[in-house]
Length: 173
Image 1 (cartoon, rainbow, N blue to C red):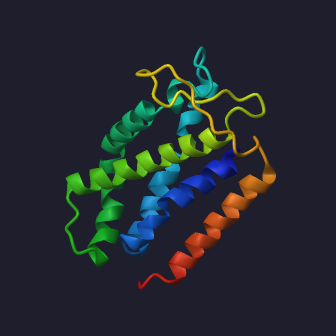
Image 2: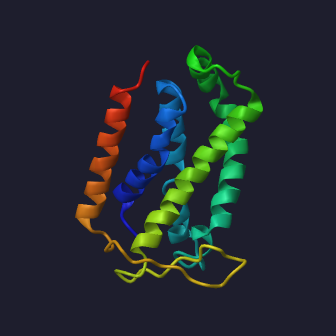
């Protein structure tokens, strides 16, 4: 597992394609939604009797979190996105479209967490992930990044910030 900065960086990298789909305001909104769940799987650190990298580090958890979170956040985000969306997007912002937008952003943020943990699990005493819990009891680990390595965390973050800066600079808005 990388630290918080590494998780935020990975969510930023996963959300970068938004700049090719929407205008500036909507893209920033999508990135923000993805960042909301970039740390969510680590809730297991605060839950008694829930092993780290267990059920909350599964694809099922990410999907349930995104679907439920989308239902809760869609009405809350609608006023802001209605203003942003209507300025440049060609398709009307319906409740269903906003729900899908928010749900995909939340799912992307949670999956980015699983991805980077998959690359760094197994080091520093961190267990592998139960990605397919409860369907398969197999643990998964790639163990490519050393746990809590400052070069990886700051490096990923620097790359993500520079990438978003370049994408903002070349945005046509």
